[in-house]
Image 1 (cartoon, one colour):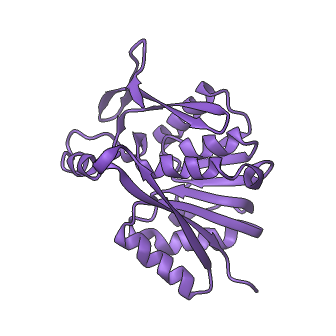
Image 2: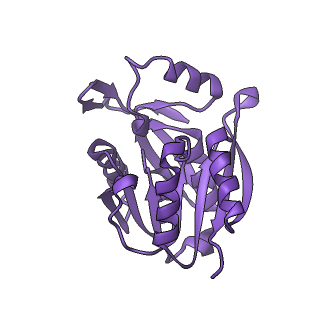
Length: 230
């Protein structure tokens, strides 16, 4: 559920000021409070959002259904995330990373935008999250050499021009026995990358979530990837 923040708060950006909205999301025995500027949950809402280029907020400040699905998936894997290290790519409002931190993981949330990372940090502070670091990072000019138990990302596979960079990060930044967890609303470019990874020896399986209500609910796949052996 999303509601206006009380008292009203604005996020100032280079393209204008946006009112902040709160989403409350149960994760295990906790409830996350996540600020965002707009929620795009159904396909109709996404179409309307994308057709207003002069008025829309930056993608990363918006709450997307894939982020909610990934957070719910993480919440079902308490023992798999507790005490583990997690790299979140394209963190946006930070919901999946917050869910992992709530389970006791050490999380690095990354994005190429300082404004997006500001929102991540603001949400981290709002939830009194511990164990989260915030790091600027461009996938095409990636410098982080750390290896993580998990690499997670919500709706980050939509641009096929980024696929090579993302696969390189998956290969170079996974710890031994590490896994990748990606949520996606069955976008064709995403399915193309996943098929390519499987052809190159990656193990793949997925679960399915429905985010939203009634006939407008959005089907979201959460893909778990394991790297090739050897």
